[in-house]
Amino acid sequence: MAFSKGWLVGWFGIILVGGMLLPPAWSAEKAAIRPNFVFIFADDLGYGDLACYGHPYVKTPNLDRLASQGTRFTQAYVTGMTCCPSRTGLMTGKYPATYAKYMSDFGFGNRTTVTELLHQHGYSTGHCGKWHIGPNETPGTYGIDEIAAKPNQPSNSKDQSRDSSLFQAAIEFLEANADKPFYLNVWGHISHFPVSGAEDFLPLYEDLELNESECPPGLQLKFEQCRSLQGEAEASFKNYLSEVTALDAEVGRLLKKLDELGLSENTIVVFSSDHGPAPVVLGVKKDSKKDNRRPERITFARNMLGSPGPFRGGKHTFLEGGVRVPFIIRWPDHIPANVVNENSVISFIDWLPSICQLAGISSLPDDLDQDGEDISDIWLGADRSRTLPLFWRTNANNASSVVRFGNWKYFASNRRRGTVELYDLLADPREENNLAEVETRIVELLQAMVEKWEATLPKDYVKGKSRED
Image 1 (cartoon, rainbow, N blue to C red):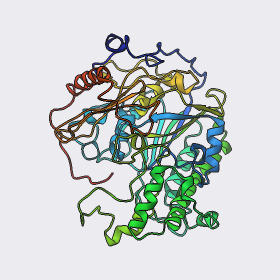
Image 2 (cartoon, one colour):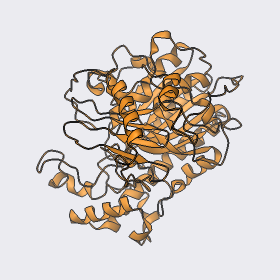
Image 3 (tube, rainbow, N blue to C red):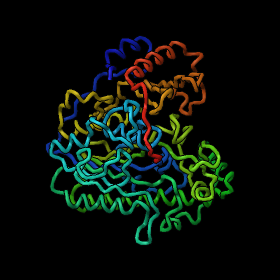
Image 4 (cartoon, rainbow, N blue to C red):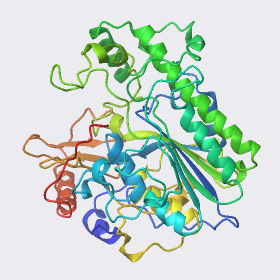
């Protein structure tokens, strides 16, 4: 990528203030023993879907405990508004829009992944759960030694949730690799469509009496949409909450195994979500296969009551509710415990260089051409934000780009979108007050930044047959 800190200072140093440009990161001392990594990635879980992120009703004791033992970030971002682009950015450190061929169908081409780099440096690597990052799921793909790509399907009578089998595979990986450094993806399906409710956990919500006024505006809107599909909001809400609590229980089971194996002290555990919550009503043509009003979808659609927290939007949008996600990280005696970081802007585009730094991989290949930067010092407690801008764009011709830099978020125009939008996220996190006509100089500079980035992107995009999201 053509951007550099010097270029940004040249464009913005005279006008962007208040901590928007910060000094270079300090380097953390390497651990004497290389840490393990367990990365738990929920599917379509909203920013506001955990108790520790302010949900008024959900029960997530294990994830709340994990947050109390580590640091919880409130300005963490993913690289896409749907599943595959989000996973692509973190695996390769490249923005999804830099791929001419859609990744779930064609893979990552010759791009290097974080798992390949770790494998090359002596780590055992594993992947359990959702895949959606290419057509090849055989062991060895992307440097992953063991792959247990579990499909999204209802739980059976032996399981406590539809994610039980993939968490069991993760536990078996831990048991088999406890004597060596390892990196493990645990990518769940909860709370992706279809949400039917987790039978074992519904009794926890038996006495819930829903007061919709206690919920944020984005969730209140979903209750209305649930009713528009002839659903009963309270019953549907209980179904959704029971699945989130089931996921929490699976996380608890995995964390307990780390304790039993004596691995917790030297294992970095990260929990997050691939993007915002799925909508109740999809913006698709009536009677299309994904129309949630269809008889085979409507029962599940009523239950899609994930919360974007205080933000607007969700899955399929680049609004904050679509790309800002929960992010919890724990590493005992290294990452500050019981801390909420509200100041640092972080992104999964930085996952690869940051993981490699903590793994002791001090220099990355010269041809890696990363879009992200090392933010491991922020995870370890440094009070700063990343220095490069964040970009979003779909893999489509004539798509519009979005950039966040400092507190500013800018939606550029294209042939479909005639107007531009500019928001001050510090003052207006719900993105309701468009300042584009007021802050014209900021618009000009951010537009130049977008154009510089777009000039590096493919001229045409190729879509495959994949319909997963």
